[in-house]
Length: 173
Image (cartoon, rainbow, N blue to C red):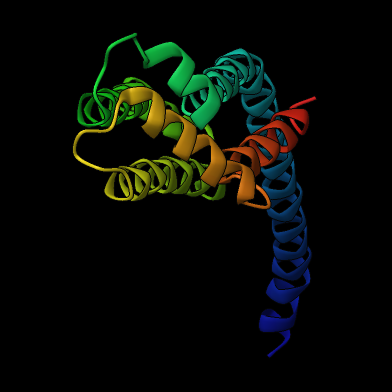
């Protein structure tokens, strides 16, 4: 028994020192990992912020371009029939949207959902107005009807999405 106590006198302090050293080294390594992660985040944020800002800019342009007033003034050509104008408006909306599909990687899911909704609602507005004009109507008639209907909407979906995108972009700074 005396031998056991003599051995325990030497082993117990060694185990305490070993456990303390292990805990200190573990804590040190955890701090080092945390520092490396913070450095990596800071560096990657410096690289991604300009790309994200560019995505917000491009999506702002998309929303402005598919706003009914801007869309009609850009697409309408004199002598167009209502059916041709409808087809050209829908084509322009889809082309703009498809051109900016990759930007969804850089924005929040909420922002992208509002952008998709704005596109769909604008398409629905064009199609609804086209249904309400006669088959012989001119593009001017369809354009006027689209503008009248859009003026009666309290807040256009494109404007809702645009406000959200601007708000989200401001959070980058």
